[in-house]
Length: 72
Image (tube, rainbow, N blue to C red; front, side, top):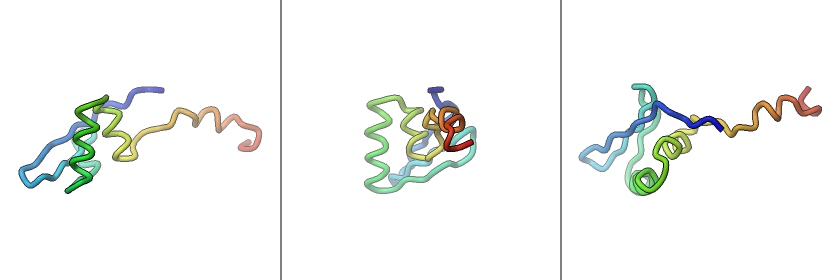
């Protein structure tokens, strides 16, 4: 699976976390969701965590599914 890239996040003073992808806002997290995201981002691969939280990632099975006889 290709590793996602181009994500970054910014913590704001009010506890809000803004996730951006290539300079554009991809998601805003507040409260408990922001705290949970920060814990995951700091403990693992931050790029992959941000891709999962924003929904901007591929599962890696698109090519396999396209070639399946049921989908032809």
